Image (cartoon, rainbow, N blue to C red):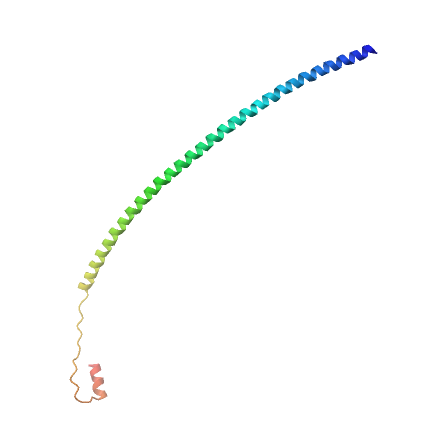
Length: 134
């Protein structure tokens, strides 16, 4: 029976040896995974800094572009205001010219107005009627 127990102990020792090897291998993988995790954290930190810098740069570019567009629009507004003033001046000239043509083209009307005689005596309705229809 001793030999059977010795045989079982030997098997257990071999099994324990195998388990220790597996544990050492797992520990090695665990250390490797922790190292990779730390590397990933560093890479993520670098990436976030790069993305922040790109976003900041793109915001500066956008602000610069907006300033340029604003300046261009202000220039266009000034040019349009000058053009409007020029057109207003031309409109005044055209209105004056048109007004002169209307005055020249319109014939002067002559209206015959009867001069009243001095009121010396009363008049009849017939005289007033004749006066109105003459």
